[in-house]
Amino acid sequence: MAITGLSYIAGQWLGNQEGKTFQSFCPGTNEQLPTTFYDATDAQLEQAAAAAQTAFKPYRNSSYQQRAEFLNTIAEEIMNLGDTLIETTMQETNLPRQRLEGERMRTVAQLRAFATALEQNLAPLNLSYVDDADANRTPMPKPRTELTYLPVGVVAVFGASNFPYAFSTLGGDTAAALAAGCPVIVKTHNAHPATSELMTQAIDSAIKKCDMPMGVFSMLQAKAYSISHQLVAHPVVKAVGFTGSFNVANALIETINTREEPIPFYGELGSINPQLIFKNKATQDGKTLAQQLVASMLMGNGQFCTSPGVWFVPSEQTEFEQAAIDAVKAAGSDTLLTPGILKSFISAIAGFEGSEGVTRLAKGQLDKPYHADAHLYACDVDTFLANDHLQEEVFGPCALIVRYDSDASLAKVVDALAGQLSASVHGTAQELTAQAGIISDLHYKVGRIALGQMPTGVEVCASMNHGGPFPSSTDVRSTSVGLQAMTRFLRPLCIQS
Ligand code: NAP
Image 1 (tube, rainbow, N blue to C red):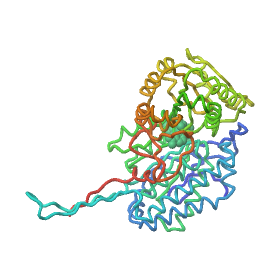
Image 2: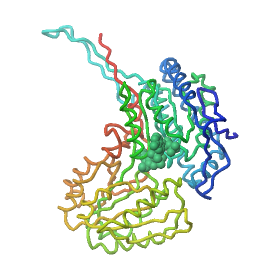
Image 3: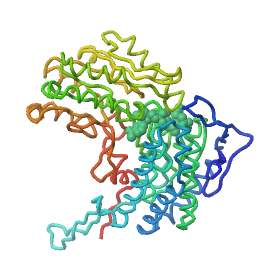
Image 4: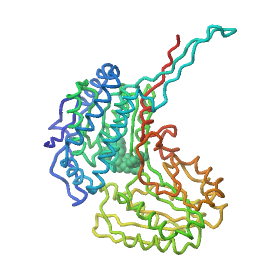
């Protein structure tokens, strides 16, 4: 399982020894790793695109059973990578073993869930619809019409740094596209290139074992961003699945807008995942709730798209605030996934420190200069409403308490919220009923609402929705997690007879 640093183009491992290269990085030691990776060339992208286009016909014609076998084999091959996979990713991401083993399980479960749906003829997706003919209808007979779905074609996938398995090379987007019958070209994330290569070894074995067309999957390693833009601009690509930041999504959308043929861009981005806390709940369970929120905010060192970034708390909840302060002060620091993410975190913290009306309540213990320590800030509703930056995601261990003094001011902030992946509501049973109006308004701001639960942890199941109104995602109608994710890569066809 040696790491070659090469890209995988339709069954061949290719690199350009004379071209650009980059090294992988170990955030745990803040040092470059010795492995060299080779930037994929324009010619290799063309080769991947041509092979994917050629593979589309035989792959889309494969039976659901064959595709299910393929997905199950990929899952099996991921498990066969064994501890090498976990150890490689630990080194590249500094994420702990237990978290990575859990994420691997989730990734494998995701592939198997799509396989099961295919074996069930996609029944769980409720896609088919038939209108019977009526020859006697007047004034005109009615034809039989049947709604069916076809794969859209080649899909480009971009993974995020913080989920090296579940939202990366063989993550949800790739699994959904392959299940739908679409060949995939992945642009790997530089934060875990060796992990991406191992994952590609797994799919390479599965392609061979299942006798799938070689062009059904290609993987491009590259440090230069030009290849990402060339990929989304390529005429062969018919849809893009992207997980990452708002700014990068915007840059890719700009390129897509220059295409002759428009294509859908499914960007799963970030959000502040507001926490609405009602008064009686804060008074009764303030301490426990504050500790749970800090623990949720610290998960993955704050590097979760569902991290609870802003908490709306009634004024004068001293026990709640004190418990949150104590928990943050006790938090040890850790590295972030990349030096770039650390730089953005430091700049976001500087933004809080310089914001009028925002006070720092607590700070964790910084162990090393390249670590990020937890931060907790507070402000009032007027300050929050006056400063748009306070609605921006801080990727790292940081949260903002927004103190409100009346239901009317809470309703006002909910109204002013931008689109979110998720939100939570914490109230007593009575409060959940009495505040139904505010909660119902919150529905229109989010893709998922958690009642009395933390926002972190996204279940992989048919009823999941992981997306949300802009700017948390670029298409409010779709999800990147769960079986429905597949419908992003299908398009309707009506057959009339
Ligand atoms: P990122 O910096 O946006 O990177 C995403 C991808 O875009 C990577 O492949 C990256 O390549 C590429 N890229 C970076 N700059 C680019 C540019 N200028 N032009 C073209 N491509 C470019 O995001 P990240 O650091 O991986 O992840 C953090 C973000 O993802 C957070 O906002 C987080 O909330 C979000 N996220 C969302 C979800 C979700 O499900 N909604 C899940 C996880 C994470 P390189 O590898 O070369 O940098």
